[in-house]
Image (cartoon, rainbow, N blue to C red; front, side):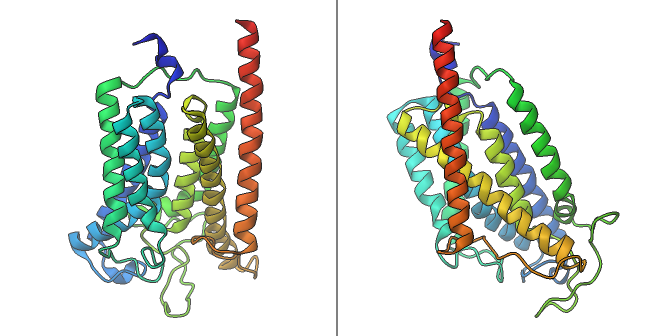
Length: 305
């Protein structure tokens, strides 16, 4: 390991995030391949074709969103011009998922447009493999007090997401959660409270978990402009993920239970709305606060040298 390796981001957090999404993608593939479409949500193809198609949609949303952050860390580890070029290409492909109609909650069958973001994710995964092979995992950041907060936060998120995890695996979770109780919606008279298959609430949970993990890697990313952009993007990914997880949980566990009558607005797609303005504002505040703390900590470390 070279002396400057500790100054570059390691790949441990990157691999944790990839593993998380690969496991979720595998669950989507298997569940949509084995269950009939009438037990799922807004898909029309079954069998392995249906499973592969839904997995491709999942690769675009949400995996492509987190892949944008992952390639910044990986390219910073490689520190090669060709790596930055590959990262830029991956980002250009991944952001096609934001184009209107590419991801439609009312039609979750795979479309040709989904292949672009899928290709971006594959390029990001390939770049990660190259970085691991050429540069190794790197020197991990030592654990600190903030990591205990990260772990506690992740446990709370996963506890709230258990009904969606179960649905991804193809069954309903009971107990304190609403699950298999029939709660009809317009156009879906037999819909249960937590439909089987994948939920955007779990997408939000996964994005928030990814943001928490990648926040450990941001301080080592160079150059500074990329670190600043990545820091804000990770903060926005955290806020966006939490907002979508809350909205889905609110609907399925509170509104459908009759505890609360008012819905929260959908925040999946970027729009000029107060909700999106609030998300961007909160993300900016988080980013600036974290950047300030990191600057103070760096100054203290240099003073003790």
